[in-house]
Length: 196
Image 1 (cartoon, rainbow, N blue to C red):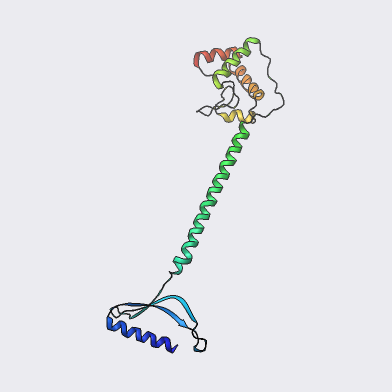
Image 2 (image 1 turned 180 degrees about the vertical axis):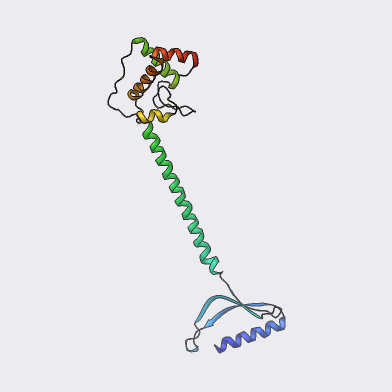
């Protein structure tokens, strides 16, 4: 320790004479019996006669915030972003699976459809073709759904959740007969109004 103290005093005197700040890498010498082993640390001693404090000790390799906390915070931010991206991807995948399941045609037990005459079948097909292209899964911009475009689509989904053709045909046939008396009546209304 005596050697370090003498070296510091000598450097301080030289610095005082030069009136310039001097930076000296600081090293501790192990016990005199174990010399010349030198243990380096992470600090720099600065001697300056032009500042109120003649000696200042500063970390040479960065602060705890710079070397430990900043990388830790960056890693935590990156992990949170990765977790959010994974959750978003999982949600999109689940939504796509749900859409695929709702659009998939499932074969269901036959639904009783009222008997139609040949002309009623033609009228029904005309309306289905003009409303949905005869597609039971078709949805329009207003949210109408199915062969005959039930508005809102939730009315049809309550009765035909699998959106199969036979169930929707029974649903729209019941609607045509209860509202217009027959498919021919529904066709006549559709020709006049372009909706039914």
